Image (cartoon, rainbow, N blue to C red; front, side, top):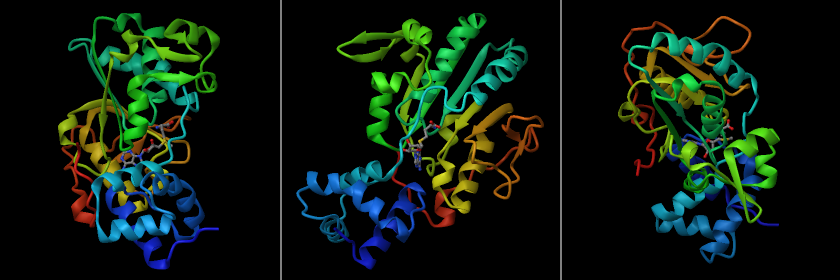
Length: 294
Ligand SMILES: C[S@@+](CC[C@H](N)C(=O)[O-])C[C@H]1O[C@@H](n2cnc3c(N)ncnc32)[C@H](O)[C@@H]1O
C-alpha cells in the first residue's frame, strides 16, 4: 500500500488549490494516490510520492497539467438532471427568443463541460425544439480545465454506455452516427460549439456577455472563497436578462450577493441587480495563481 509524506501531501493539495481552485483534504490521500498512479507510471516514477518529489525539485508545467487532469472529476451525462433542460426549453429559451428577436443573437456557455455531454445536450435541445432559431446567430462556448476531457468533447465520439446515459433511442438515431461500435455526434451539431480550454480561475472578460451559463457540478470542488470568485465573475459577464444554472447541490446562498435565485420551483439564477456593472475579480487577489490560459 503506497503512502505520501505529509509534506508532499500538503504540497499537492496546496498546488491543486492554487492552480485550479480544487479543494482536496488530507483524508483524500487514498484518492490522490489512486488518481496519480497512472501519471507516476507514465513518467517512470515507482510511486506517487516519488513523482511529487520530482515535481517539487524540478517543477514541470507539463507534468503539473497531467496531475491537474488526473485529479479533476469528469463525471457527466447527457441531459443531466433533466429539470434544467426542461426549464431551458419551456421558460428560458421562449423568453430569450422574445427579448432578443431584434438582434437574433444568443450566447450560451457550458463553463465546465467535461467530455461534452452538456453542450451537446443544449445543441440537441435547440435543434429538436426551436426550428425558429435556425437563422439566429447562436454561439455555444464549451470550456473545461481538463485537456483530456476537452479533447474528448471536441471529438464528440462516445461509447455505447455513454450514449445511453441520458439519450433516448430516437435522439441517438437523429443526432449520432454509429461506426465501429462508437457513436459520433453529427458535424452540423458539433460545428455549433466552440471548444476552449479555460480555467475558471482565469479572468472572464474575453468571453463577453453571455445569455445562458451552465456551470454545473464544479463549484462543489471549490471552497467558499473560490466559489465566490467564480460566481462574481459569471455575474459580471451575464447579460442583464441572462440566466445561470448550477448543479443540484450548488447554490449562491451564503456565497455571494451578486446573483439571486429566480423565484419558482426550479433553482436558477440571474444578476442580483440587472444593468448594474459588476466588476470582475482577479484570482490573484485571493492568493491563487492559476495556469495561464493556453
Ligand atoms: C463533474 S464535471 C461536470 C461536468 C458537467 N458540467 C456536468 O454537470 O455534467 C466537473 C468538471 O469541472 C472541471 N473543472 C474543475 N476545476 C475547474 C476549473 N478550475 N476550471 C474549469 N473547469 C474545471 C473538471 O475538469 C470537470 O470536467
